[in-house]
Image (cartoon, rainbow, N blue to C red):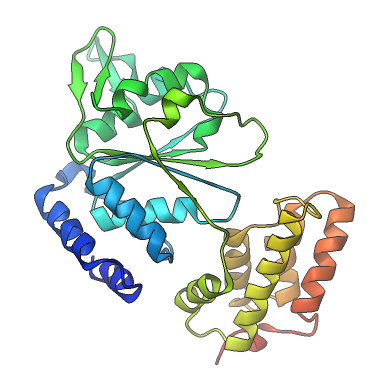
Length: 307
């Protein structure tokens, strides 16, 4: 945990919150069978105010809803929070086929007996995990309705035909939602009232440079600045409606930069990670022009990394 706590101290997160966080971890042990669900985040989350809001809410037993546009770090924050609190993670992805049985569980046969095959919400409740509910605004009414008693002060799951289960005191749920994705809808008032909501701000240059320094410690500063500038240029065009959010993909940009380590030409790598994320020929031309202003075609991996 030291590294994660160091990131909090580096950002001058409130010392009282850090002390309470460490006490929480000592209070709630993780069962041996669930330790495989403990995971270190791929990159740290940077944002003092957001971290303080999230940690304070979770310490008080509240659930979080992280809302915002694409590439604002919602899932990265959820990963970091689970790691900071030392809890196993249960990922719950909402889509058209997600129903109540997908979340809670369904009947199955074991040794010629009917038993409940537990779903991720049930397991999260039983073992005191952090349930990360991705794209919660794509959930069907059937799926959402079973969450009401789970997410409010009752903290129970009533499984028809089985015992009522109470949530482990360390169990928390973190929902994420993007604006404007196909298939999304407005969340109903009853569901939103069961969360504290954090509106995630767009990523800024300082945050991008911190992410690049952690991910690519051997990256040349001048090159890292150009990649950060590329992302910010695309972010501005997306916010102005000049392009869609498809190419606004920080994961894609980081993956593209990793392929440069294998000697791939930077312009070709960015094409895979950013430009080709859109399938509209006119949009590709716009993105290609932005890329050319930041990443010269003559660049090689030696222009991006030291050594």
